[in-house]
Image (tube, rainbow, N blue to C red; front, side):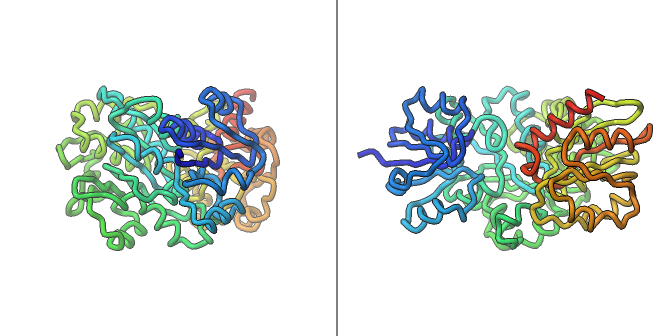
Length: 444
C-alpha cells in the first residue's frame, strides 16, 4: 500500500507539496481550514488530488504516515497537537522537496534583507546563463518546481517558520543576513527559540559547503560557536577583519574569496547601507558558484529591486512617496529610515508582533516631521511616540493614511510607508497593503 502523505494548508507551498507527493506515487490528501483559492483547486483537480476546505476531518488526517505543514500554521493549532500526540512526523514543504532533487541549494534567511538578497542572487545566476529556479517565499514553491522542472540550482528564501520543520535538508550555500527580534509571538516570546530556528539553515552542512553571514551582527557573533558548523565561513561587513570574504574600503566593495575583485560603491543598483550588505552576500554566493566577476559586477549594477521594499512610487507636488510595505518588523523600518535623505512623514502600524519601538526612536526624532498610525488598534503607538512632539494622525484605511500624509508633507519631504507590523488587521497581506498605498498615491 502506498505511503499516505497529508498536506495541511493549500496555498502555494501546500499545493506544490501535494503535486510532488502525487507524482512520487504517494496516497495524497490536502486539508485547509480556510477556503482554497480557485487556481490551487484547479491544479489539484487536474492531477486527481483529493482535498477539503474550511475544515480538518480528523479521520482523513490522523491516518497519515507523514504530514507536510504549511509554514503559516502555528504549532499550537489543535490539529497539529493531535498529529504530534499520534507520533506522526511533521515536515515542511522544503524538507519534502529536497528529497527529490540533486540540485545545488543556495538558501537565504535572516530577519531582514532576505527577499532582496534572494532576488539579487537569482538575477546574477540567470544573467550568467545558469539553469536556476527561484523558490521559498518568492515565486512558485520549491516542491512544485521539483515536480515540474529540472533545475541545476535553486535560490531559496527561507523564513524561520519554514526552517522549523526542516531536518535533513541540506544547503550547499547558506546565507544568514542578520537576526533581530521578529515573530516572537510564534516562539513563546523567547528570542533564543527564534535564533535557533534561523541557525537551522546550516544544520546539515559538510566541509564542502559555504556559510555566508554578516560579521557585525552581535547575535550571530554570540551564537556562532554553538552550532558545530562544518562549512567554510564567508563573513562580510563594513570593516576588513581576518578571514573576511567581502568588506568596504575607500567607497569600494572588496570581494576577496574565492576570486578577488572590487566594485565602486556608487555603481551598485541598490542604495543604503543595508543594501550594501545584500549586494555583498549575493556577490559572494555568485563568486562561490564560479560565476565570472564581470558578470557579477554587471548584475549588481543593473538589478531592478524588489516590489514593496523601498519602492519609489512617484513624486506629487515635490513630495516623494515610497512603498516599504514589506517592512513587517521594527528593524526593517530602521533600515528604511536610515536610508532616507530628506525629512520624512512615516506611516506605521498594523498587527503588532510584540514590537519594541525603542530601536527606531532616535531615527524618528532625527528624520520624521510627522507620524501616521495605520491600524485597528494604535494604542501602543500613541503611548510610545506621542511624547516626541510630532504631528500625528490616527487612520483606519489606506485612503485616509495617504490623505493625511498629503496634508502633512511639505515640498522636498518624503512620505514613507514602513509599517513595522504585520498587515492582517486591515489588509490581506503586505502586498495588498503596498498595492493599496500605490493606488491611493497615484490617484492624488
